[in-house]
Image (tube, rainbow, N blue to C red):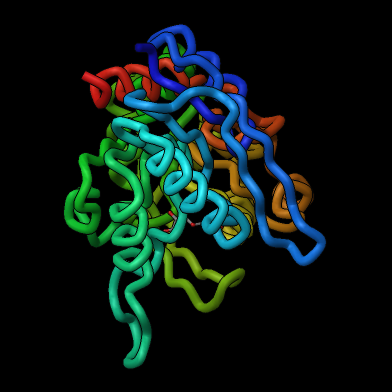
Length: 294
Ligand code: R5P
């Protein structure tokens, strides 16, 4: 029987790609929030022996996580064969080491909790910094789809650009995209001083004077990193930089602040729904889900 899909956290493009590629049928789920905030779920579609796909982005994970686990348990209790999670954006990846005594390595605990409730996971470019693969923390088959091929297609022929990654972590994306799209690239170094404060050191960019900078990062959260880069590039007399990210988290008023800082344009992949979505990763996500269901 074809798999059931419940789109918990609306993502029309990915849901449509899953419907088209794996023939997923939408599960009918009645969802209710009690006055005290507790959740009620009732699945109205037969579940017995069917594969179930829960589509739920894990930005603002604190608000979504409990309902997600309750949903997984409900589907399992109703007889689902296997339950997979499609989270184009996977949260809780930043704390991948005990930076200070007493801290929890929350990426590990988060992964362990998801691994207890799901049979597989598909996500897009999780923030793998000190971990090299999701398998270091996830105990279930976990596939990280790469946005780079879609970004490369999007940028092909843009010879007017040079790519700048703001920090060492971004090198994995910037280098792959630069090579694939035949664009020059460079990487800055970053020191983080707080949630919203960073300092950057730009490399020598003289060779790119005649080109527009395109800042490339996996995530824009507060926008502090790219704001700092934009300011420094403008001080050096470069044209207004454009910004490209995989995950447009854009917390608080990050987008407005980027524009105020002088961003020419904001471009993102459609892992998180945002007005800047120009790069479609839904087909790649659907292809990875197809593999998982085999
Ligand atoms: C960190 O290493 C990431 O790659 C991003 O650079 C970071 O998450 C961006 O955060 P923010 O927009 O808050 O500076």
